[in-house]
Figure 1 (cartoon, rainbow, N blue to C red):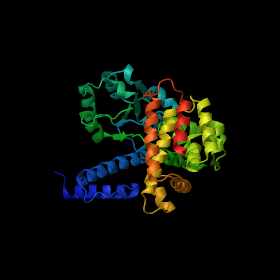
Figure 2: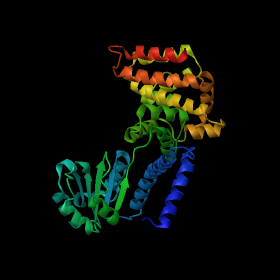
Figure 3: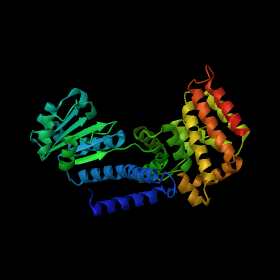
Figure 4: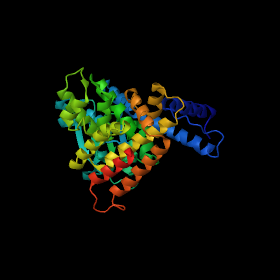
Length: 389
């Protein structure tokens, strides 16, 4: 049974995360009180874990820089970016170039086994105080059960060895003894995927940490078109930062020039045109999508439109429509709040419900249900006509 102190700590964490992430909803008094309360608690801890991933990764790197090294590192989870960030940093910075030839070994999961890993880990360093063993793609090892050799090693790991297990694209089974022994002897980092609505703020934070700034619309464009694959996002951001002077704000024009996302003909401009009921602009953008279907897949467009109109519906039900409250409740930058007011004036609650139904209908049609051999552009034109009229 958890102690009273632990229960109090958990409640404090839930309360804090609920407040910081705006998870408070009216759950008292209804038949789903217990379920809703449980769901909020679970959601709070999930968000708390996701927000902590970056902080934990930065702390691990800071500890490595200050030579606070531990014998085992298990890096696992669905988001490979932080796993690669830490394992690559250790590969590049723990030893100098002269020492790496003697005391650093890089193995790959599908090409090695536990015998090879443990034998390498048990060696003493030759030219340094430490030897580094990095097992990349560790998810490809034969993890049928806890290997006895590995378990024996983890119970008493070599203090002069840094064993790094980079287990990507999925979570390591926390029930395994290997997980518990690694937690006790070293460091475990779970790298979780960002929610889609957290990618734009992540982009802004990444850019700011490196001495640039980015316009909210530019960050939103990148997030929508690149998704939550952080490695892909970082590659494009690094390309941008090579071409935009440090200290300058990255704009939508910079995105268009360097990444190829049109600043005038994209799903954000389509949503804006729909919000203003700008018929000419909306159909110009749809025509552009129709002529460039590979760069503008209909599933991505419908997903972005769906998220947009769900936020409009949520806006209708807000009692406080001040810019600060709207930005917080909809999870958008304050720059965009006025647009949601415009959209809510253009589409009342009933029409917004209808539009969400249309979006679901055309999502199914885009996948071939009741719409055989219909071009993507024609589906979008039909959908936009229904929305506007």
